[in-house]
Amino acid sequence: MKRGRQKGTWFPIPDDPDEARFLLTVLTPIQYRVLNSKADGEKQVEYHENDDGVTQRFEYYDRNEELYNELLYKTCILNWEGIQNDDGTEFPYSPENCIELMKDDPVLAQFVTDSLRELNRVVRDRQKATTKNLPTS
Image 1: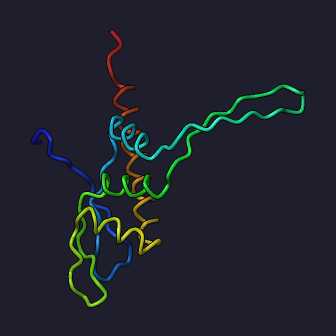
Image 2 (image 1 turned 30 degrees about the vertical axis):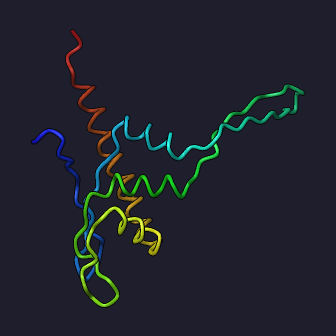
């Protein structure tokens, strides 16, 4: 493996006649923090009184979901094959085309989102198994 070269996992689109597929990767913890910091707006603070008369403070960030999704797709979709324009010509991968495709096709965006969840689950399970099997001395 070459250092700095992003690897990924191919996810074929089920039952696609063109056998289209996406090359996806998971975010590193640092990439995840950077993505969140870019998409999070200003901190919001609200106070709510519960049934017992106790006031509770709630803090959250006003997240720009559209920006978050754009950054996520640009980072996690590394390539694709078999994606075509309406006229049947190849729709080449680029970060800009990636955002356009995900905005124009919500079903495809959901497929990519579901595939990323599955990939994250597999990576998390592998990390747990590796940690569980480490020597404890």
